[in-house]
Length: 403
Image (cartoon, rainbow, N blue to C red):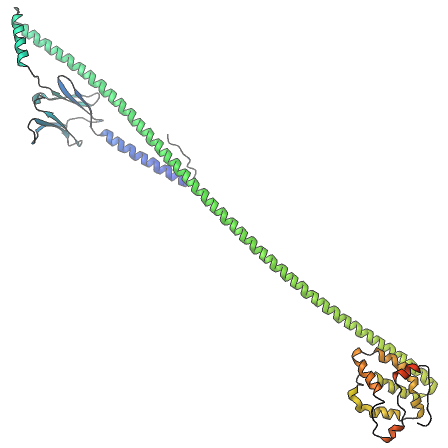
């Protein structure tokens, strides 16, 4: 029995198609087996015999025709046909070999076999016939009148016996033929089933191979997608790391700028603090000098310190020399108080910013070189230089006669 795996719809439809083809083939074989066919052609010494087998039904529609051929008058065609069953067979004999008038039908109903008996013509040799007659004449003996009757009866019995033997032989042959046909049919069916099973297995193997190839293809596509996704993730990670690095560098620059600004602020604060300390020391010095020499010297020292500590006191502003000359045109006591003031102004000058130090030094040294347009100015006492102030740090008053 045909068996296969029908777990999948494709296998089920393949098996169903194979079974449908098998049923069609079996039905075709059944139709072929239902048709009448010639199973045996037998020749004996006395007759020719043709056996026709039919699966079901009778032979009432079968007909025999004896027809002469046009090409050869010595040959005759025996045509056995049935329009109802669609059966037609032609057998050819020589006319001198058969007795056409004695051809007859014989049916075996148990086996459903139709037998066509075609007797042969008896041929006599003349010489043999003469010898036989002569022998019979020489051996002739008196007999009763019923001799021929007894002989006819014996011949009839012999014919009946031969007929029964022939029927037994035909029956045996038909049984053997049916058995062999059944075995052949079973063998062909087994071969067809094996072929169908082989085809189903081959189709299943092909389908399995196709599924395996499709699975391999899907696996390759999945791996390609995974690799592509990994590459994209790696690119995004590198981009993120690059952005983080740029952000860190930017933050570092911002922090550096912030530290630089904080350092500048601290430096300004320190400078402001130092300037405040210098002003406090100057204030203390001024108060001390004021307590010693009075308010006039204090005001002159305050104006001179203010002029020395101003950042705009540069070489380009020589136009302010008039104010400086006015300050120097005061009393000799005021002029002599300048060397006393210079030691306290030196630290203030040293604490100013670096960019103004050169201009202040040049302006201090240039005071002696600036020409005085007014004749009254020549009699004024010039301010001492920084070197003189440093040398006369402890000089409180200095005055020259005759200038």
